[in-house]
Each structure stands twice: as C-alpha cells, then as structure tokens.
Length: 129
Ligand SMILES: [Zn+2]
Image 1 (cartoon, rainbow, N blue to C red):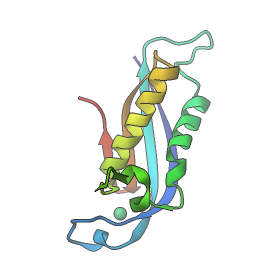
Image 2: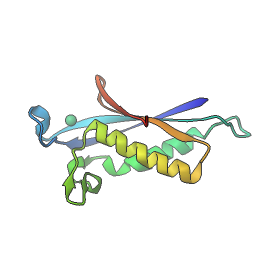
Image 3: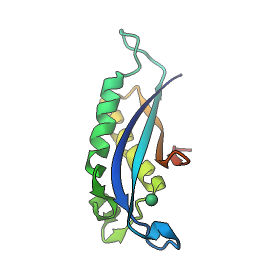
C-alpha cells in the first residue's frame, strides 16, 4: 500500500463552549492540517495521485477557515446545534470532505487519516476504525 501526506495551514480564531479554562475565551491558532491518503495502484506516471491535486483539494476544504472566527461558520452551527470547533471536530470535518471528494473523483485513492495541530505540542487525528 502507498501512503501520501500533504500539509496545509490556516490562521483562525475560536473559543470553546462548556469548557473550564483559558480556551473558553476568544483566542487564535495557526492550525496545521495533514491529510494522508492511501491506495494500491499507481498510474502510468508512477503516482498514486498527484500531490498537486491533493494539496488543491485540502486547500479548498480549509479555505473558508482561514482568517475566520470558526465558531461562526455554518459547519459548526448545524441545525441550531452548536459544535465546538476543536481540533478533533476540525479533523473529522476535513476527513469527511476529503473522503467525499476522493470517492467522487479518484475512487482508487482513499483518505486514511487527517491530523489537525493547534500547536507544535498538541494535535488530534481522525481516522475510521
Ligand atoms: Zn484553541
């Protein structure tokens, strides 16, 4: 199996509801996102999928987050239910979007994991069991 990883970052503010501590107050991070895809078959060029395509896909997914206040975005306010924009929830959302886009356009490549780091010391990974 081949595994490919691309990385992108964005700057955004958030605050955490129902949380006791300094993260309950408005603050920001430069978030680093790593998306790993996998597959068995290489194309005629010797690639699983072009890194350029993966970077573009990930870039388009996280574009609405850049220089935003995450709590106000629609994906964290679904059907009147507020979802905390934690690293975990960001990783889950990005994973589902990558999965949906890859199934539609590159069915031989599947998303394996998405990691979201809110600092060099703290990261969350989402992957399916
Ligand atoms: Zn934070």
